[in-house]
Length: 183
Image 1 (cartoon, rainbow, N blue to C red):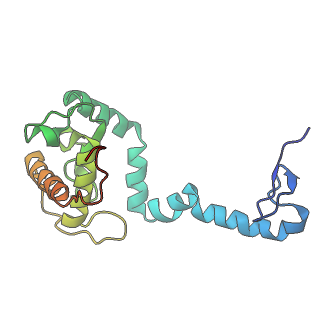
Image 2: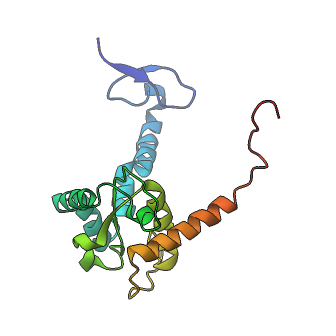
């Protein structure tokens, strides 16, 4: 028995044999459907955004390389999988699995393979630091790079990260949060 699926045209429930996407009635829609799938697919993102320029293509391929995989592993082992940003302010956060460049690769590509520029980071610190990097250095998609001479240490980043975390926590409102039963 051949494999079948439903026609992808909205509201049509006719069965079609694979690899067809639409029934005979909606064949004209098939090309549009494929184009939309390509546009929103990861491969489109990789072609148009991630690999948009030669520098971005090189940076992306670096993070898929054996060089980065082994460097990350060496640095995580060196740091005993403890977040170095948390540790700098006296907090022990185990199981930090992100290898983070202290100075972003976009700012200092020459430091991308330097083990002294890679530290273990927990997810929360990594996310806050990425936001700070975008503000300080202008890193990220569609931004203009700035402050390329600025080099911050782990202690500097740690202070900035925890200032931001505390600011975010102080802005949290309990007004709309559910209360425990009995209150």
